Image (cartoon, rainbow, N blue to C red; front, side):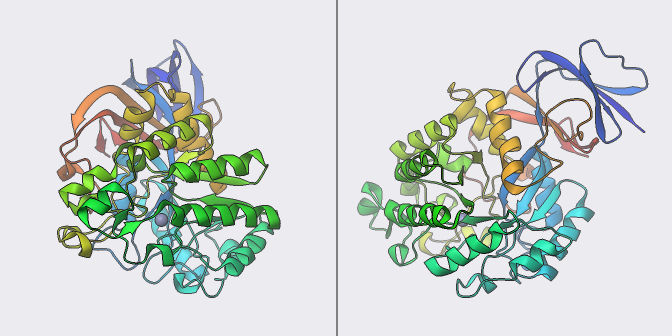
Length: 428
Ligand SMILES: [Zn+2]
């Protein structure tokens, strides 16, 4: 078996150490390890993290291979330092049966760049009316434990209650896209000062917050586990904080773009900033950063949402919602959380690897960087500064809000079970 010695990396941002990979496993972590028979990677000054895990990725296959495929999406993931992604269910056909989730799972296995764990739809066709075959998806080869109608909200309280009851039996979790649909009819951006000035339909914070409040209470009532996707408002943070203080089994995520960007950008009418939930205000951004730092928000999830050029390069009202995110997530987190002093690298490892793996029930990802563990690792040159150029993306889509923006940090190496999927910043 091949041996790789990563020399002098700051493990989770701590002291410089050597990490010896033997085959698929971390063989040894220490100082002054022998390089005999090993390929050496000089990593002095770089930060070594457990391979990142994304609980919220849209891979678009089957059905929208013009925007992304499992192969291109997992290549993008590896480029961004990820070793596992959870694939959202809003494909065509919808991943609401054992057959479709197994198809996605098989495509992930064939890709070789990143493990793919399919998410199953909560309701048939994402229509919110009838529960999908949750048990059959869990019992399938894909072993689905996370269920979500993401893109749409499970807005019927009775359906949500039944879903929470159903997944409780096998320790699953429902990931809710919290958006009260009647309150957001015709909405184009965050409801506030900017939407009033621009005359665009507003998306009120209460549309998100009212569903979160309802769902944490339902989770408490049922004694089940709920995960809230992409929190975007200060009020949502307060509700999750209250629920956790009450002992309710709730976890929550925030996207990188909601940690950095605000609705002021919509003034440009550049549809690259159109996203669901919408970009909010500076006050919301501050609350989200603080909540991620203090653990109220458990994880960063990308909501990587690739769209072809023609679906974004059009007038605001007609444009699709969503942004790609896998290849810039870690850089945005470095800028907004690490360089602001809100998180150290161990904190980043918790929120981008350990916790998402735990929430999603992955056994072989989100593991400590220590001997005997699977060699799923990400090496980051945190001193790097570069301007984002989507022409270099591995994703099939280019709809990034960061084009031309300088962001810190660069993933130099990613290892999936000891195999380098990225070498010197280039896909292997
Ligand atoms: Zn969503």
